[in-house]
Length: 135
Image (cartoon, rainbow, N blue to C red):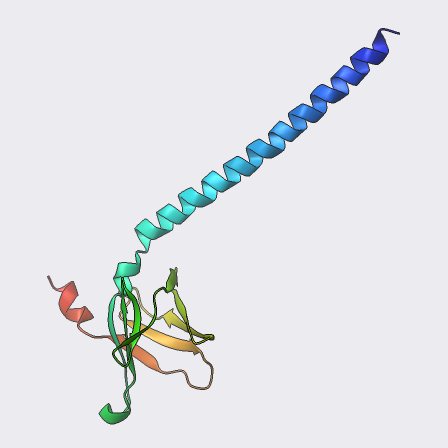
């Protein structure tokens, strides 16, 4: 008879340990993801793409441009959204429910190609980036 309560006690301890392991694993995953995000922000800061992006290989009167800054994204001298994301080599933001995505084409982050909207895929150049690298 004394083995029955021990078995119930062992099962209870096993369940508690299992729950603690699950909670611990969840906490470790959260901490690791936070650490990884901090590392990415350090290695790939959003400020590396701040500036005026102008479309290349088009006539000046048809040239499109936008500005990325800590305030958000400006188009036609108006802030159209207050946030954008830079994930490795992809820049994305939404304007009026329409997703805009750009792929960084070089290591110096001075050229990007528009991926979305897909009707047209121009290349944009960061104005003045070559001058900033010389200092």
